[in-house]
Structures are given as C-alpha cells and as structure tokens.
Length: 154
Image 1 (spheres, one colour):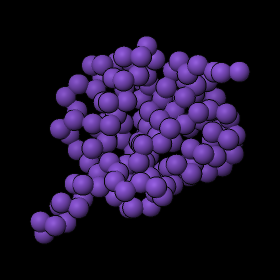
Image 2 (cartoon, one colour; image 1 turned 90 degrees about the vertical axis):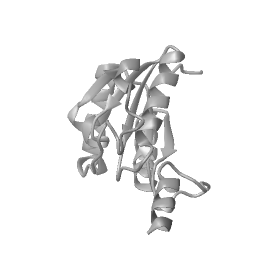
Image 3 (tube, rainbow, N blue to C red; image 1 turned 120 degrees about the horizontal axis):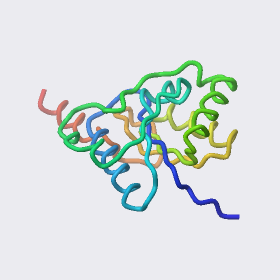
Image 4 (cartoon, rainbow, N blue to C red; image 1 turned 90 degrees about the horizontal axis):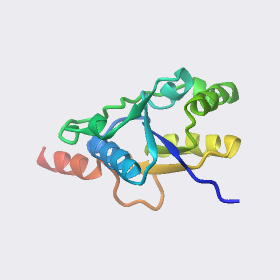
C-alpha cells in the first residue's frame, strides 16, 4: 500500500554550513508548489523533542539565501539518542500531522534519521550539508565549495 506524504518537516542538524538557507528555501518552495504542507523544525532534533515546530509558507523563506548558516538553527540533541526521546519527537510530529522529514546535515544527522525512520516508519530524505567529507557516495555537499574556496584564499 502506497502512502502519500502530505506534511513534511524540514530540519538542519549538526554543524551549519554555507548554503543551508538556500536549501531550506528550495525545499519549502518545492513542497508548497506540490501542495504539501511544510513545517520548519527549529534547532534540529532538539526542536522535534521540544515541539518547536512552525508552519512555513513562501514568505517564511523570502530573503534568506544571502544569509549564512540556517534560519532553522541547529543543535545537537542528547535526548534524541534515547528511545524515549525519539518517541517524544514522534508524538510531536504526529500532533502536527507530519508524515515525512527532510534532514539537512551530515553523517551523524543521517544516522539519527535512519534509526528514527526504522522505529516509526517515517520516510526521511537526507540532504548532505557538511564540510566533513564523511558521507559515502557524495563528492560535493552543501557548504563544500565555500569551504574549499575560503581555504584556498588563505
């Protein structure tokens, strides 16, 4: 049986990198174009656990691509490492009807998403936003080009 994703939460997790705001903007606007309700999850997995989730519209992502970092903010969340913390996060997503996630981050963020997806059957898409070169199968990531060009100039 095929499930239709109707509400997507987007979050940035781990360290921020240049280009994350452009990615958030593209994700939100693409979702809205396809009739999907979009939600921003503040401070990564911490926002999922603490129910810091906001509905996003096209105006929510206006004039952000020139800003560095991520408008959604980012953090590391120890509570999400526990089954109890992930259960709270899942319950908060259910309160909003969110049935899909987009995670902008690196290897650790994606490992957390995989565990969460397996436990609660929530489809997750990972968009590589890291300068650590720790994601297999990916030559370039969000932030990579800026990091390399900044290092070359010094």
